[in-house]
Length: 498
Ligand code: NAD
Image (cartoon, rainbow, N blue to C red; front, side, top):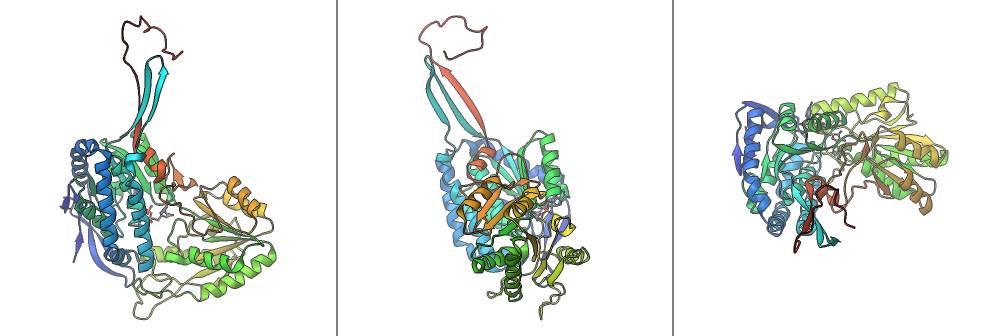
């Protein structure tokens, strides 16, 4: 059976832990490969390689670093089909969706190609008599990224492309559920001219994560995953003096206003709720309808749209979505459906016990739709992360808008309306990090920044965009004077520029 190994110092590395994890095929439920799980010694070897590569890479001028990124982008584009197939085979999302995942990653690599401009400092000539002040953004050193299963191409690129372009060296610890694409990313980065040790991949579970967050030579950690672990990584990492950004879970709401284009809103939400089997942190698993008539019409149309979705294997070009990632996740989602019924929500469409002929052991869940979900319900408060849409009824926009604002998560939210002023006011007031106006999955483009609020993100800087460059660099400010003669004794007073 194939074993996915670590990738350290430019080559495959089996590691010394002797621990292996299983990689499943979510279409069939079979183990298709194994992955090496790093122990502390394996992580330490990767950190040493990254540490050794740092002086030369950080001294490489930004234009040359950008050239590697340009070539990396070209190779990713050339390998799109191969990467998408590999991604779908381990994650279960359909091929078109895997291509979207990879394309979003390529977009960040493309953004990183602009590093000579992005990393420029600031300069003030004549800040005082004969005094100039300038600042520079310097790389941090060895950095690490810990990523979730649901975007195995995009999220590793969010972190590594920007960090590396800034002159850092990097340890990527991807999800052990779908680790193959991250390794291919590192191989292609090498092929693009990236020096050995600049981008390393170490697989593993909690042991590897704990070793990364504790390691004294790792200067910054970016994490994306569920909230409890995000908070854990944030507190452990910052306690050891690291810079940490940790993105967590989500429960995004779509507000359906009476004046929206209902046909379009239903089309948008059916994709945003059920696409990728609901395993997107920017999915819209909650629809809040405003007014009884809007609610009734939305539920009727959505029931029809959801009932007509095709669930299929990840290579089925006609399927709207594929299996969820694991047997445990399937059981968890189905349990939430059971709890929702017990809590008194009205189950209009039940996706449990969904089987596919010839793939009876695959992790398939049909689309589920709940109406009359109440904010006090556990199934409303918690993230389900599956193909389950919950409809909450509200009477006014104020009542509807308060729901995402008060929710523990604050990743994304969308409003569907034809009223520009109401939408503008909503976007300004809502207590959520990313907002869509008639846009169902408002993932910001690579040159803006991605990040939620509340329990959806711990730390100060968002992913990619200018925020990403800030996270992966530290600012040094230089005040210089080249006096012509003796300027007297000023050492006992705080210098001023007057
Ligand atoms: P997860 O939290 O289980 O795993 C994320 C990473 O943490 C993985 O690399 C995993 O190996 C590691 N990990 C798992 N258990 C750990 C533990 N006990 N201690 C230390 N590390 C551990 O998340 P997942 O199931 O892979 O991904 C889905 C979650 O990620 C969802 O909650 C989703 O909302 C979230 N997500 C958030 C964003 C965002 O930007 N906010 C984006 C994508 C996914």
